[in-house]
Length: 341
Image 1: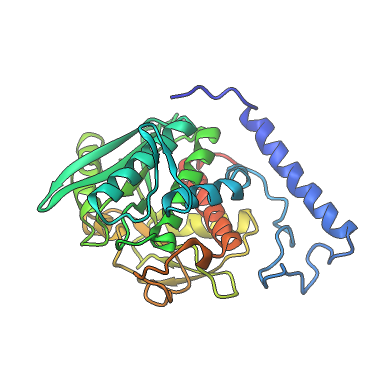
Image 2 (image 1 turned 90 degrees about the horizontal axis):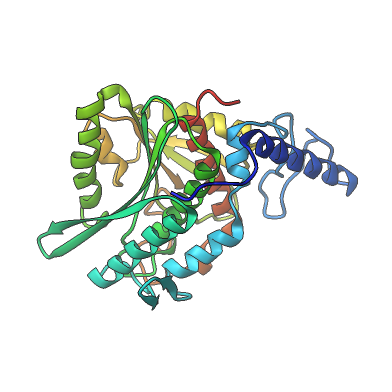
């Protein structure tokens, strides 16, 4: 793991808080609504960031959210959907789809190398399937504390298309969140996993939960498992900032952490809750572990480009995706560093 030599944690928290306070000052100075004034909105109809009594919240949630970079989101989306070649160690490769063995393998290599560029040890876990090979990718940020484990996940494959929302949006989320957690240095260990073959039966997550997660429970006990926060299709928005948390009363501490993160970072996301299955978090539930899925307001099938060749980056709302990733990063920070404020 690359040694981090930047500012200390305290310095970074103070800096992040100052940035928010300065932003608040600039809003007032430009003639906009003052803190807490009704009617303050973004141009696209979302509540304005930095408005309200929680705008100057500090701590790991705000620190994690403040590191999420929109330019990095756009660049990663372009590489994962074929807009620009992915700079792999073996040579530039255009990943135009993630359904074929070749496309999925290239995407796995891109994820592994992207995690390692961040400074996080990563590995591709190959597994056999009837007609070929699956490629799960795992990157682990080791905790400094008592050995508990959290999983933050998305799925690698697509329906033989660019798969911008489904699920390049989730892949970019786990990369961005990993960057944030690497800088924070969490108390608990966080595993970032890109599961393969979700589209044909949640195969990659089934194999991973049964083997890797099961091995940790066997070695360290049930109490070592915090749970899983899964992101699937988090990039599409029709004008609001609506999102859904699929918890089914089986999310354990994750539900509370998401809602605390919304408050701590003064997120524009308007969160509904539903009992959503049909994605990789379901395998955590089946094994008896807490889990939840974060998705956009379309609840899968309502996405107009669902499993179509038109699921491309131009259909995404990048500021919305940015906010969703900030929420994931803040939630992950709260779960992984529960004693920080």
